[in-house]
Image (cartoon, rainbow, N blue to C red; front, top):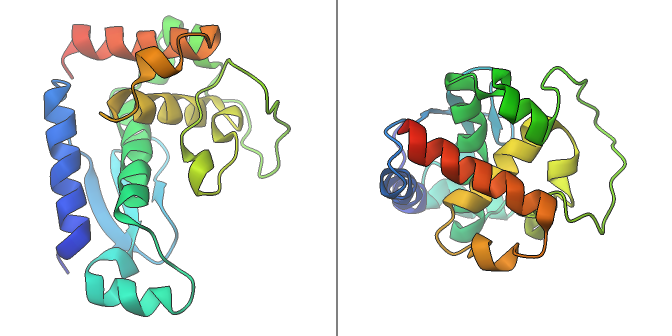
Length: 181
């Protein structure tokens, strides 16, 4: 099955956003039964099969499984952050470790977060993942990358008083300007 309709438009938009940021890497996508995900340490992203076309999306909406085009784009940007992190093993860089933490830290389903922290960006919180960047260093990077990549984020302005989060966004900006991945 090939992506069509809204998903196809979103994948084309993602490719344009990556190119605008001089990133040649484009993840591999496949359809699965699980919700969104990026297989650990690969450049492959799983997309729920019911997003393949608008007909399947309408059927899924009957069961409360729906995403708007904006939400699909947000999830694609986030998962692409994981894929780029894994494909280029960015987590082994000393500066990455200083900014985001230890990649080998255990993943926990339940995590404690500070809702007032200015050290982490907020991106997927608007679609039901509050303070997701605080869950794990890998999520922190993926969320930071998504904010940095999103042309509507206005990250330089919106995070200007969030010292820790802004530092991470500048790291992403330097990393991808310098490396031309």
